[in-house]
Length: 109
Image 1 (tube, rainbow, N blue to C red):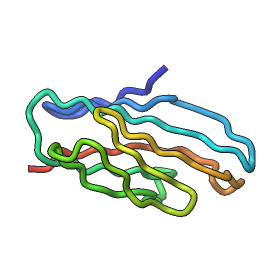
Image 2: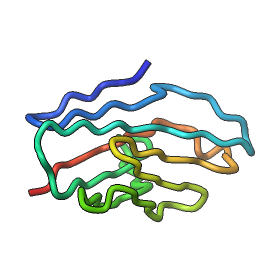
Image 3: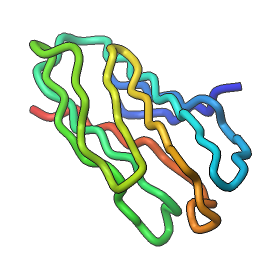
Image 4: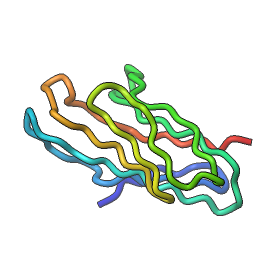
């Protein structure tokens, strides 16, 4: 089941899967669905690992005029944006990849 993160106003973000297990050497794909109820020009999307420690894995700005985007991330990570979903893919997992991953989205004005 997706994990919902309520946001103020016009922005709603949900993450799926809420939890997953990956073996060392394997891969995973984490989805982040972004629903915006009003027209927008730019969103800032971040993937963070172990939220308390704040390890930023990806940080990109998404433009409504450019609907498909691929953004650079930390090594072995790939971010794809196909509205309304951003997908973070992890390849060749290592033990130190274990942790909680959070998608953060900010509507920029």
